[in-house]
Length: 114
Length: 115
Figure 1: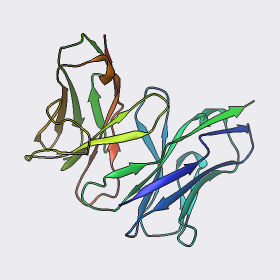
Figure 2: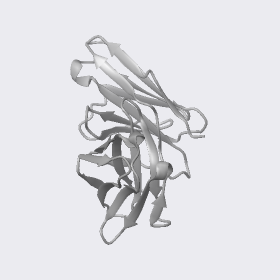
Figure 3: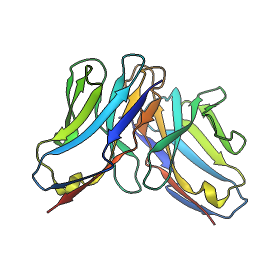
Figure 4: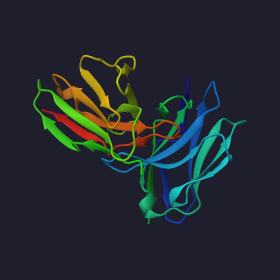
């Protein structure tokens, strides 16, 4: 079984500051890991994914994440926050099986201060 | 490519009635579709996995007779909430994946309000 834990339900950053969202996973098999962003009343948009290739993954909108097996972590970062980054962010894990069934973390709400 | 469309985006229905939500893969064949439920300020909870041409697999605690899922074609899955009650009010999201691809693509969600 797979699961993820997102540390911090709410993160507030100043515009231009570093964004760091934490995600730790638990998996009995090599995991596939994902970060999604959700804007109010919308579906999920994929930011980036790790599927056993490079451990440093670059995604859209300037986000990146690093897979650290020793720490069972997949933290999301962005060097400089923009107002448009205010949203809900979900970390998810899959066992890579058919259809990529996902288990989601509880989510982290990001607010950006001007 | 890889667009998933959900319809309707919002629906209000009376208690006791049924409502159908459609999930379509517009530009690919979706061998598997997933249905999630999301309560306000909470994460997505998987309700069921739907494979084309076979019965859906429901997660523990999800009433299969209340949440009817049909995946009759490779581009369409439907979720029918039967005899809806106010506690069924929620945000429902589908996702679809295709063979050989390493991600699932999400619909825009459906806000269901039962009054």
